[in-house]
Length: 288
Ligand code: C5P
Image 1 (cartoon, rainbow, N blue to C red):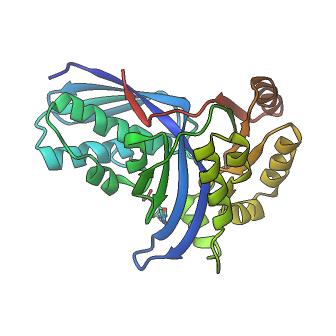
Image 2 (tube, rainbow, N blue to C red):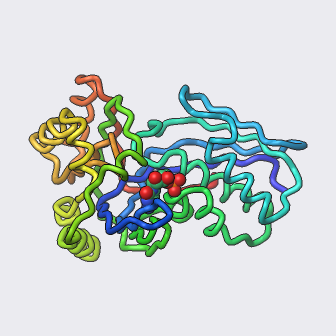
């Protein structure tokens, strides 16, 4: 058995997010295109005699059983009978509760790491499914279309090389709140998805940027109009496209050149926003 492991877990953004209907169990039927980006947390795993110990260098991250990495450990133990304890150390770079799936990525990293330590084949997808709707995406990451609750995944062509700027305002948007407020569409916004898929298959980043769409924008911008103004400002600074990621509050923007992307990131920092310059990533987790 491996002594300890270090795993990079990458953030995700939603290039497209449509809500198709409400399920009887409270969840929603969605269609989304999810994309990994190079902004990543580090997760260190080390076996211990018994029990789980979670530590994190960032404030606001629970280290008890509510952390999704604890759920990952529980699921893994349940299915494999893993007999030992585990120490998990999370080094946070991905902003917390920002619509970037950082906690789900950490959980997928723990599943992948435990499977490596275990050394036998384990089908991780059903375990990820139990932990949360976003977790299965991170097992593979890259560019994928998600349907159903978000867990029915199809790998798509990778996004062409570009720069992604993430603008993260200090706001807290609750995902269940956003789902509860969203108006279900009479007709889905399929044209944007078609545009993204065509952009992916032709390696055309401008088409991908033109296809950016998120049904949550109307709800979240309605509650936080400053986000809508920030989106317009980012457009004015040369972005090919700007969109809210997940239920927000992060806005992601796509650029084809480094200069305008880094100028925007610097301007955002000057304005007091946390900002990150990233690239599309091909993986959701990477065991180092
Ligand atoms: O699956 P997860 O625990 O990440 O979902 C968190 C919350 O987001 C759910 O309790 C639900 O309110 C909402 N959700 C939803 N439909 C989805 C995914 C999440 O309504 N497809």
